[in-house]
Image (cartoon, rainbow, N blue to C red; front, side):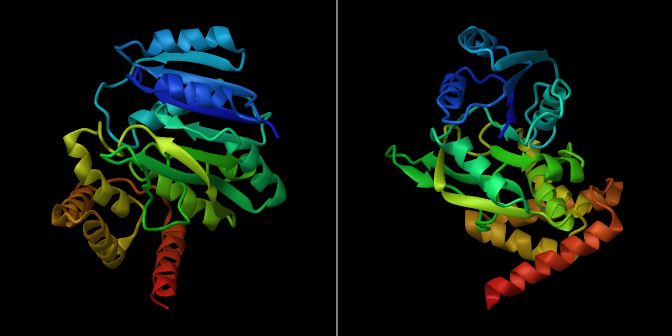
Length: 283
């Protein structure tokens, strides 16, 4: 199967070499890798240039955007700029972070999943992060059926059906919800262990704490699903401020009339799906 990778990169000199090396070592190589150098001020571009010389699969795109790292905006803008350089001659497409080391068989396995199960629209493995002792530990949301945004692979049919990626916080949740709305399945492979070199959210701007609640509003979760999801997040992170921040973000978005990411019909489907999944976990 043919696949493309798009890697948004902003000041990634500490990690990019390891990420690109792991891409080059794949047992199933990509047809093209677009590295979007997004306003980097360190040696990111020098590293990209070295890899351009090492393999023709790599292509660089320099772009300038905000220096503020906000989840769901900067990275998806960069991704979409890279997407504009690609044609439709692929079987699946990948959004990959510039601070991830993939196992050598990662995309061979992803291709096997898509080829063997046409109903699968989004696939991926699991993220591991190093603890204080240097041991790699699973770092995954409570929902094990969720594919982390750091390495999401989409079948072409699914990617087209959901209209690509939303330029907003929550893009890596709404994509899966819309995929299921379009009758695609999400597949997570527990055998695929990727190493995430930077702790999740480490470089985000401090204002990002309100964006989770805003995302819940724009995905039309409604009050009670937002309430339950926020309680679970706060308990999981052992920080009550998470709950407070979520609701501050939710009501700020509501007051400001933030545009929804989904239609009313899609919102109804999403709420029914959320309730169904919550009830299933209680049984």
